[in-house]
Length: 266
Ligand SMILES: NC(=O)c1ccc[n+]([C@@H]2O[C@H](COP(=O)([O-])OP(=O)(O)OC[C@H]3O[C@@H](n4cnc5c(N)ncnc54)[C@H](OP(=O)(O)O)[C@@H]3O)[C@@H](O)[C@H]2O)c1
Image 1 (cartoon, rainbow, N blue to C red):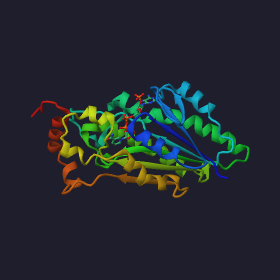
Image 2: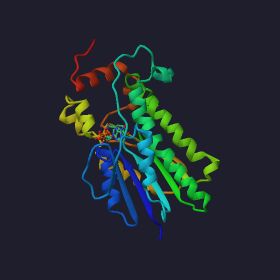
Image 3: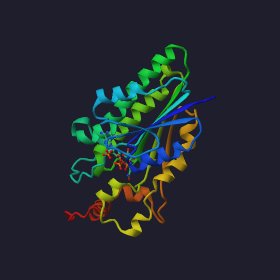
Image 4: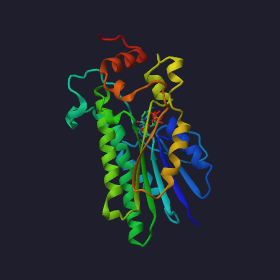
């Protein structure tokens, strides 16, 4: 019988928690919820700060992979920051110009889990096991537009995207690691509501519900093929043309600053 291990980070957040709720209902599946703060859950719960690589490695090393045929890592962590200073377009953003906290929250928190998990799997493979691993993280549907107001976030997501894609396509893994990047539009989470307290009820009607992300991505996540796939999940906004809107920085700025409750600088 096939047995799955699903590890969800950011399990206390709205997105992570929706995946925990889903996988708790599935047969032959052990669900591990990783959170920084304490949480109540029917799944196994590990509390660790994912920025602490040693503590994270110790947590991952405690997980039992014996008898597991497929492991799925779903990474529901990744801080966002609105950066109003935008003298330089983000197209040429370099690591030096990026906010370290945003980069670490999006990139290092993932790598700190993935590396010990892959090392553990690798030891298992050397003993003849064929356990597969899905690496899944979330990006924004805006990442492809390189919006200067969140250049650090986009840079971090692009770095993470490349990291997962490279592993999924690496010959060393012979197809045993697959990568999924789920790009979402504004999602109705605790942090988003804190960040944009002045968004109107009409605007929030089009914020994505975390359950919809699960519904629209879980089949691709579970599938062993293709080895690399990006999925866009969004709430269609009537009359919204992404090309026009995402290239109009004045409009983006005034909407965001109004929703965040900031005095507009213009
Ligand atoms: N919300 C959106 O509109 C949106 C849009 C595009 C992409 N995304 C992406 O979707 C994912 C989930 O978003 P979300 O809005 O659900 O996030 P969230 O509300 O910020 O939840 C994130 C969770 O991550 C945990 N966390 C943060 N730093 C941690 C650390 N160092 N170690 C362990 N846990 C940590 C938090 O734990 P504590 O509660 O303990 O602090 C929180 O439970 C993120 O990758 C985000 O970038 C979100």
